[in-house]
Image (cartoon, rainbow, N blue to C red; front, side, top):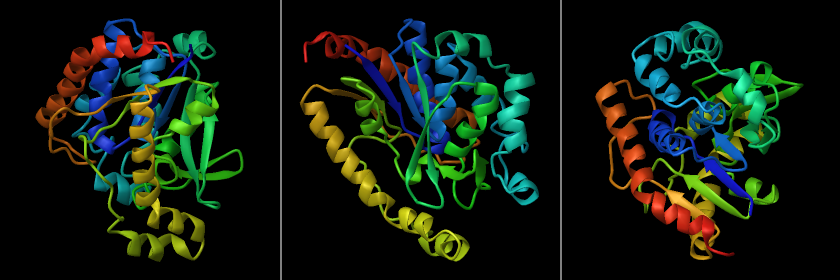
Length: 286
């Protein structure tokens, strides 16, 4: 049986996923493929290179560093999350990325970054083969409208993958993953509402990128439809969902390390408490 994993984003709320993944690494547990969106793609990078604690060190170690994320960075560079610092300085120097381990396992555990094409408003899925060069795809996956510059890659203009496909379960099913683990940063019962900044998105993007503006305006519809699909797949024994067992107020741009640590520990503990059921899910014939 082929097992996939889908990691939703959520900005700094995604530290929940980092906790889940660190527990999995403590148990030496890995699937046959990982798809990450936005923050999920960022945390997924450390998981597929088997670097336990790396996401924690980055997010809590640099949460208050204006080079990592700040309105100062947004004003000076066009990116709230400093592109050069977050995607080059950190992995190349400060919290080194294990490129060799990624290379060793990239075929055994393929890693997909999900982005949105601003010209078409549709999702673009990339299987990462060279993390040094294609880290720009991870950056694109996490580049929120209004908060980041459009990322160019191989002639395509890309932004946050969550716009077009926040929870890419269909991608993993197309990749023949018969069962999938899905991590979500919101509690059970959460439903997405229409973006309150759609008017500003229209003002900034609609004239040049009308399909992007349309995708943002309709994002909540597709997102909630996917949640319904996940419930059906869960009932059929095809999906195992990990989500926060209790509500922790964490903003997308949270800088309070105590809050971030609480969310991380919740992810770790939820994964630990659910691991037995997860093993049953995996081992049950489907």
